[in-house]
Amino acid sequence: MKSIDINADLGEFRNRNQLNNELNILKHVSSCSIACGGHIGDFESIQSIMMPCKDLNISTGPHPSYPDKTGFGRKEININSDKLEKSITEQIELFFKVSKKLSYKPDHVKLHGRLYNDAAKKEHLANLFLKIVSSFDNDLSVIGPTNSLLETLTIKKGLRFIPEAFIDRAYNDDYSLVDRTKEDALLTSLDKKINQTRDIVINEEVTTITGKRIKMKAETLCIHGDNAGTLNTLKEINDMLIQEKIIIKSS
Image (cartoon, rainbow, N blue to C red):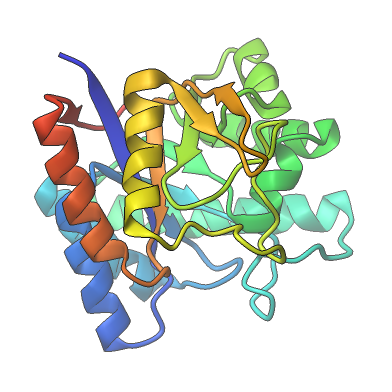
């Protein structure tokens, strides 16, 4: 029977209500990436998400970003390679401290925001990221955009790559995500999100912002925990996948 991993980017809460929303999201996903201090997050917030993940047997991994709390890691910043390497390393180290305390080993690493997009197409950033990942644990998988330079380089270095697609983001014809500054970058319609999920999982295709159909093979699908309606979307997607006889499980 066909299966798919559903992942969410979490640990991005700023208050109790947002934390409760993230905890509810965990009931409908099979893996999650947890913010670890670059754009948001600290030891306590990581622990708040990792503890229930352990209880629910949900796969986890660090979600490092550019050190940019002001822009939430979603803007280009001026930073040299040494400082960036130090920041990403410190973010993953913080995650591993929580992991060690809870005796719950991470399964993957996934970059956040602008760094996710930049490392997908810029060789020096991809190589820097992979160097850091290898320094921690060669068993860690790398989650990243399908059909990206990062995918090619990860496989070349002998690390496992998990190709990812998005439930709630629009795509350009070249497989890149439509920039968040542009209209229709985010899918807000429930029907559009369900249809895109079905298209990717069953047909291995997606309709781009121009209406073009492109191949889209993914092993994990991401939904953003900070978008409006995420919890309801996940419930509806879970129901759809059950109807299509598709199992939700981590990659």
